[in-house]
Length: 331
Ligand code: UDP
Image (tube, rainbow, N blue to C red; front, top):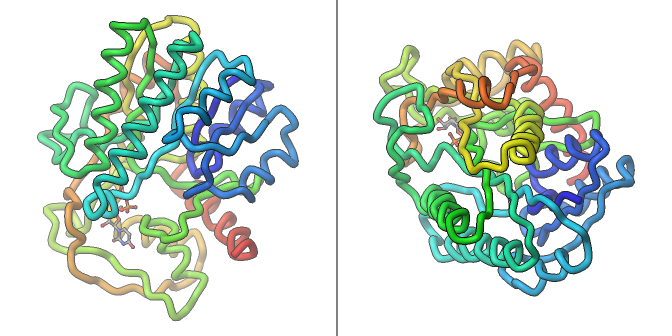
């Protein structure tokens, strides 16, 4: 069986479906602090090979119980807090939840002789880019507590490999968008800060003006450039990483992005085009801590994992829109 921590969250839930639909048995472990029981229900209504175990990684006994109860051979680890701005305001919460939580998971894994993990890391480990596109060897200087927790965990994993032979694949994501709305799952944050859902929410509510943060970045149209990767493509990368781990039994790290940059303005324009409607727009001050350009060099994932991007930007936006319409009925 595969343990998926944070499987009730955005990226985790897409991964659960990816594994379950390929016939693999999954145990979701989630404390539902940011994940949603409704997402778990939606998945379980279709996939009978998915079990849900509520628990918190901060309590080691919760995760110990999972390893005692089920025969787990690999962990896919998503459970973490992931809001950059919040991590600056409440760093302790991030170090405790992300670092301590992962330490409990890793210790429990070692005690139960489960020695393979795929870890949800982030481009935030690189910090301010020294060059673009960013490859895996780019210097790692995270500029916020969120990125620092993820880098600390990667370093802990290196030590656990040396000491206990625990093999890890770290997947460093760039900007994730899209939804698998046909499975009734998608992005659902109680306070939404991300670009695509914010544009869509403004499209669906006429009094909610979408705001572009900053117009004088050194980019072609003055707005920030990011590398937007589809969540279903990302989920497939986890399956490929899992297979790589089973095949090679080696620790490794891969960037996940498309290497195609889109500016905020371009994403806005594309959304207007996909929806075929005007969306109220306002230009406002820069948001603190946003680098001008973040672009992945994902050559390694493409060559070593044989990862291919299938969903276009247009498709991801369309899928995210269909999901927003479903989500509106849940709230
Ligand atoms: N952004 C924006 N308006 C919003 C949300 C985001 O202009 O309502 C911009 C943000 O400044 C950044 C880009 O969109 O340049 C992507 O932001 P997001 O929060 O989605 O991801 P991040 O790059 O912070 O991980």
